[in-house]
Length: 240
Image (tube, rainbow, N blue to C red):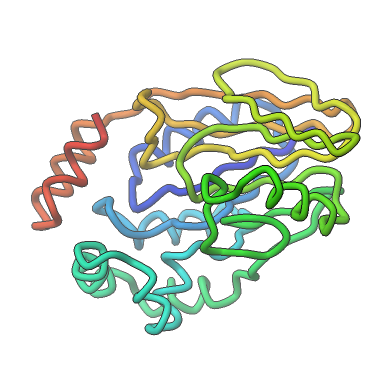
């Protein structure tokens, strides 16, 4: 059984289409999305509609939370709040209704899916946690593996015999050892790890095998779309 897991598309339809093309060649049984379909990129609504059309299993990201609940926007910095007002006008009512069905967490095929941090935080970043925090997280986590996004960086955090080990992930295969693990799947539409290619993972539960995949896409088209809409130029520049 092969499961595709991806996160943080952020309105980047060109990047998302590249992921979809790659997934169709990988004999995938189910697809899971870890939140933040919207904002930054020029095609938030199209991204949400494609997630729905493909039957992807989704969880809420902090940007979807802010769309549904205005008080959650205060979590953003000032420039992101101002940009979010732009984005909101580009999202259809149908897409809003679909987003409103996304749960805070999912438990599927023996794994926990959450946007920010296990067991159920949409907004907490993994880089905010000290080793003692991770020990508490793993002790409170009933699941042996959790998948998260939010930081836009690939990472594996493993816990066994009270020992925490953090590993930066790159393209390739990994076998998860006995114990508990949190996998940060990186970002489809806004990678921030120094490599501008799309990132997503394929998980094989029975073999406990993780594949990290990097995919190229048309960055120029996305960047031009951001500028054309009058979104902050910074969102286009950081795609490169």
